Length: 143
Image (cartoon, rainbow, N blue to C red; front, side):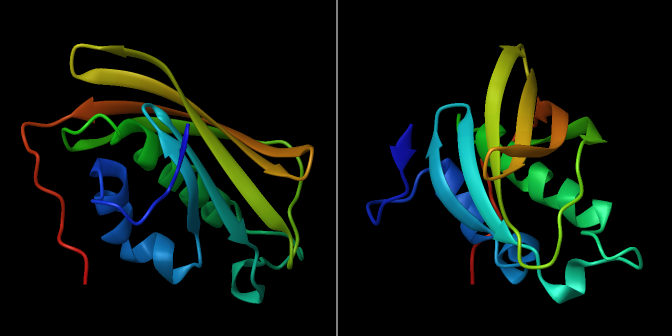
């Protein structure tokens, strides 16, 4: 795994730089490599639901962003074909979460990736994403 650097951006860095949704939520790309990515996010007051815990939609988005970084690391534009998430423990306002994505397998234009979302050593959610590469190398240009 490599640290994100200021050298010529690779496919993961280009895709993440153009990801306005993730950046607007303060999600940071911490590390990335072929088939892997580590992202960090702090749960803000706007992400908390009526039960006082992080809304599952934000946790899904966070895990999905890590999945996107990992599956786009190989170069061709890759999108989600489907995904599932299991919520294991609640997250709360102020929690710093880390999402670690790992490629499980790639076959043809498809792939399977697992993402673990943690607060420290505690697992918050487990996500499995299924990817599909499309016939494009074009990523939205970053601002």
